[in-house]
Image 1 (cartoon, rainbow, N blue to C red):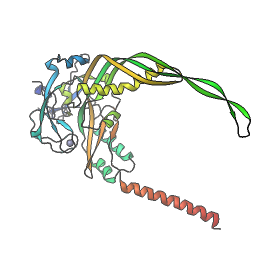
Image 2 (tube, rainbow, N blue to C red):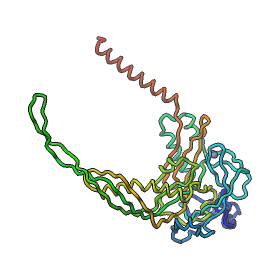
Image 3 (tube, helix red, strand yellow):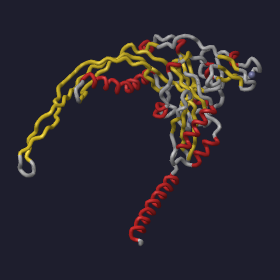
Image 4 (cartoon, rainbow, N blue to C red):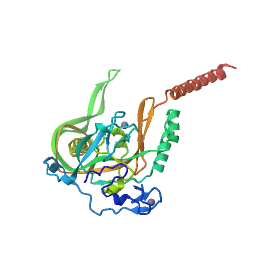
Amino acid sequence: MENNTFNERGAATNQDEIICKNCAAKLVFAPGTTSLKCEFCGALNEIEIKKEAIEELNFNAYFEKKEKSEDTQEITTVKCNACGATVTLAPNVVSDICAFCGNPLVIKEGTKSTVIKPKSLLPFAIDQKKALEAFRRWINKLWFAPTALKKYAQQSEKLSGIYIPHWTYDTSTSTQYSGQRGDDYQDTEYYTDDKGNRKSRTVTKTRWTSVSGRVVKFFNDVIVVASKSLPEKYLRKLEPWDLDKLITFDEKFLSGFKAESYQVGLNDGFETAKKIMEPDIRKLIEKDIGGDHQRISSMNTSYSSITFKHILLPVWISAYRFKEKIYRFMINARTGEVQGERPYSIIKILLAILAGIIIIGGAIYLYYYFLHGK
Ligand SMILES: [Zn+2]
Ligand SMILES: [Zn+2]
């Protein structure tokens, strides 16, 4: 059976491999290492990393249904009623809480679907303790954050470690464009000044000529977030990821962590990749046009030799409920980069404004006191 890939509390395909040889307790992946660690006796079990090259899969073949069935798997997902995240369930679970907000999930509302299996991942490098420290440092630096939030950050002892699905695309692009090239030149302009004298001055003018052409560019590893459970704008800010360190997927790295399955499909992901590539293509066209100014009136890009990778990237998540709203924080578990939503304390902002008024008022008072008071 292959559908154990997305596990929760370490339900790996081969149970023997995640059971401690010393004490038979469950082994969990130890961040920053390539080992499974026993939480009871501390024994370390090295994970044998498969030495295969990280494979790029053919994009078009997947849509012609030529994909091998071993590249896909069936999963069960359930939508969280509290935060709207889609949570991938471990096989045979009867109850679970949402990894994104901590609310209980209604398991019987789960839906089954067939998805492409992840082929590679970046294991957690930063452990929970370091992630919590980074999270607290981040909260303490926030201006106008409610005191309750800072208190929460100090007391919070748990973060969820989740592997977030991403797509990466490689593609050759060829773009046909048309536009205009602007070349500046100096010209002498004659005019009459206020006193009625005829004068001349040098002005810069632009001469526009129509241009067209073609630019080609190869893109490597354009990364697209395949999750909708966390705000994309924050996930994007967790970049860059050290994709050169990707290793072949192994369920052992998921032991003790959660893994989400993608909600942005392969095709939709590529549409996002196109938007990510566009500014680079524009820059290339502007360089190709040359001159002092460029205008692009049309561009038509064709994509060829598209390949993709489906990867899992490690993120520590904390969800904080404040005044009926959920705020989420996420930490890049490779670099320690923290991003997140934040509440503002209205009281702190008002107090700061008030303090500002008092200081300015005081300064004005002192100014007049010393100027006219004597
Ligand atoms: Zn043990
Ligand atoms: Zn939730």
